[in-house]
Image (spheres, rainbow, N blue to C red):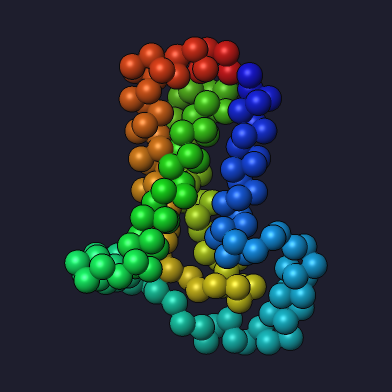
Length: 163
């Protein structure tokens, strides 16, 4: 059962990387190497990039635009949250040590989101957004809450015991 869960996690991570780093395009190592080359040729531009370094700035703006029915802002807010919910649900089932699961899920969600944001910044394939960190990490926490509720209701008990 753990093998199947690990396979599901790998497929999920592939699609998460494809959506966040490649913006839905097929994953291409060649294009990443080309981007690394461009970044090395113009490494100074990494520090001249626009981004959001103010917590809740884009979240607030997105919530204001929700009332105006701007589909992009709601997609960005909801999408960043939803993208990490499976992470928060699968990680606890994969961890063999069940101590301090909340802290582990929180830290792993934050670390994964931070690695995506830094990769986007360094490779110039997106912009750094601190609100994405907040939303992604919150998604991981929501996923963990769903996991805990499912375990307490008995839904994941069989799965957890087998893993």
